[in-house]
Amino acid sequence: MSAPVIVLLLAFLVAPIGMAAWVSVSDWNGIGSPFAAGVHAVGARNYTALLSQPGLPQQQLGESLRNNLYYVILVVPVQTALALALALFVSRRRLAGRGLFRTAYYFPSITSSVAVSILFLYIFGTSGVVNAIVGHLGGQGPNWFNDPNGLLHIIASGLGLTTAPGALANHGFLGVSWWDWLAGPSVAMIAIITLAIWTTSGTFMLIFLPAIYAIPADLTEAAIMDGASAWQRFRKVTLPMLRPALFLVLTLGLISTWQVFDQIYLMSQGNPAGTTLTPAFLSYLTSFGNQQWGQGAAIAFILFAIIVVLTIVQRLIISERRADGVS
Amino acid sequence: MRRRRLVSRGLLYLVVVFFAVLYIYPFLLDIGTAFKTEADAAAHPLSPIPQHWVLSAFSALAQQDFALWLANSVVVAVFVTLGRIVFDSMAGYALARLRFRGRGGLFAAIIAVMAVPSVVLLIPTFLVLKELNLFNSYPGMILPLMTDAAGVFIMRQFFLTIHPSIEEAAKIDGAGIFRTFWSVVLPTARPALLTLMILSFQGSWNNFSMILVAHSSPSLDTLTTGVGRLVSGQLGAGTQYPLQLAAALAMTIPVAIVFFVFQKYIMRSGEGAIKE
Image (cartoon, rainbow over all chains, first blue to last red; front, side, top):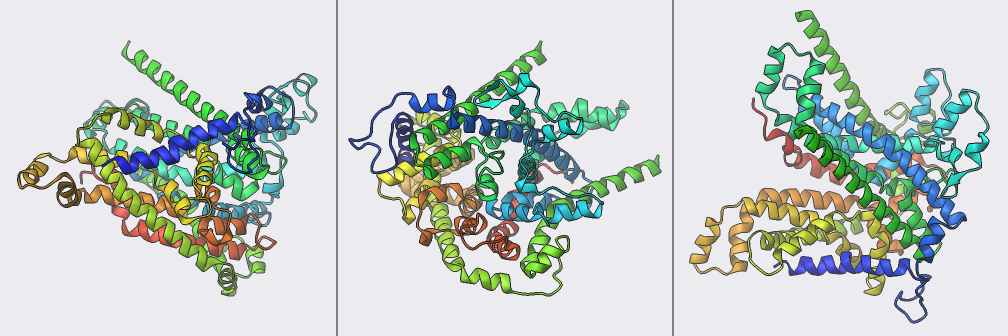
């Protein structure tokens, strides 16, 4: 009875991954079958071109990792905190219309990435919603999707640091100077980060809700009797009880934010100046766009490795914390 | 003390309403702007009410292949959903109940598969579709999406909660495995099947990346890839905000309907434990 699923899994998961692994160490150019006679194994060449050989591929990978790193650093904590806050609000028993609010917060989660991307292209457009608000407040909004300036560079130049210190400009990692690693998310990326937080916080709110309802009421009541303030109750009762849900949300967030693809494809194609390039989109661009399938597949496996390593590291941290709690 | 409580309640409502506006107002703007002229959309981005109601965005949309995209989306979503319901429930049942060699290994493999990030599968899926001559075909767009380890997991967990006595009764009456599964076990699984159905419909209707790599022919575009082309400027120039927002609105309506009809099931997660 599980035969159909086994066939599907083999045909569309196991076999594909094996084929891609082969392509990532081959010189296949997209024409014909990757198993045809003219396709050769090239060893780790595709990987070294990306990881250790100075050149455009390495620089693009470095940039995409930097961009995605800032995306993760901003999206994961903010969406988690927001989801928790929203869940705490709508779980209040005395909040009238909380079902309505819950629906409102969750609705963006069911909308397709295409529809949401269109919405945010409009909202962050040059004459869009955000800039209209900024204009009403007397300021002038940026040209969001055409502005490659990094947030930290903008702050640095506001403090008078306009040129890169030599130590940072002349050295770097993966073809990107340390100065550029420290650029922060570009203005364009900030718009996409806002989109991500807006769409997913409702999804994760739904994970927090059952955990909140599972907190025994007498626990909270006992804390109130002991004269604990709302903040103390949150820190000492609510948060510890929500730990499993919190870790689930963080793990899911970490995994999904490293995979951002749709929004980049639809909204920016990696522009401006490569500041919204992500490994997932770079992998697509390199293979489907430039027909360099070996390198594109190699990028996909590097991304896979990053996600696996981060998940393992997170698990280790969790189990260590648990051990601490016991002792 | 009472006044303080009143103030804090007022503050709570203020915050909750503020966020509700933040999450819903963009959709109101979407609806309104879809009925605006381009000049109106550019001049009054903050107002959801058009100065003059026009249908030009929708008639422009009709001139694109919108009907074709819609039909393709329906085909993909219906087949993926049906396929997942049948295959996931069968596999889930087998994993929960039947004794066969390698059951533990198979379950572990399914859990492992759930952990493979979907964007990592874009190139692999394309390669296999090419190899099987399924690229640029409906089966090529449907089959990869039908592969759904998470659904198998959901169904297995559900079948584990059903008491085996129901099946034993059927067995005594002389029903075979398939018969027992089909007419005795499956009807009890309605809540789980509904969850699976909603997730599958929403997931396949909204899917962009897998459909993108499964075809290149415009005649196979679904709403996501068709409208996606519209956005990334491959069809026509300029921003065309009303047109794009009209497309976004139109493609959201079906999932919104499913969402509101089955809202209780989707949001159920939180309600189960409420004591009022």
